[in-house]
Image (cartoon, rainbow, N blue to C red; front, side, top):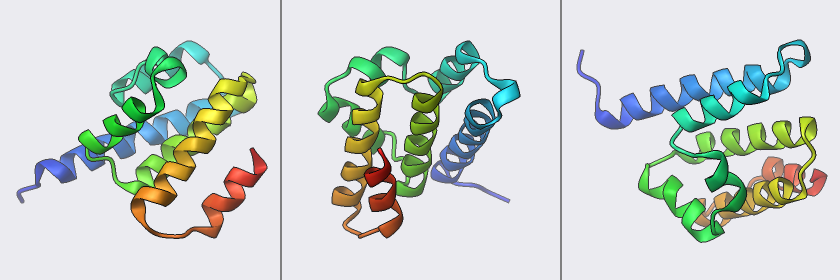
Length: 119
């Protein structure tokens, strides 16, 4: 069975996001170094996430053809990380990324709005 490049990218991203979820949401399994190593597999560095210009950061998702759902999951993971390692910059980045998803996907989500309100 042939799979398209887009399907392969989505499968790879899903795998990375599942591993990141396990790293950030299992308290006994917390490992910050492993978190950032796994983030790098998704195509983002710690520097890009924490310090990159927002427009450049958001554009990288578009260029790499991230689906909206996976962008939301990635943002959820950043929020989970921020809870382990409080960082106001990361919290703001997550809030703005949720807003970017809402604006660019052209769909309204009560779930994302609730997530933003909790930040």
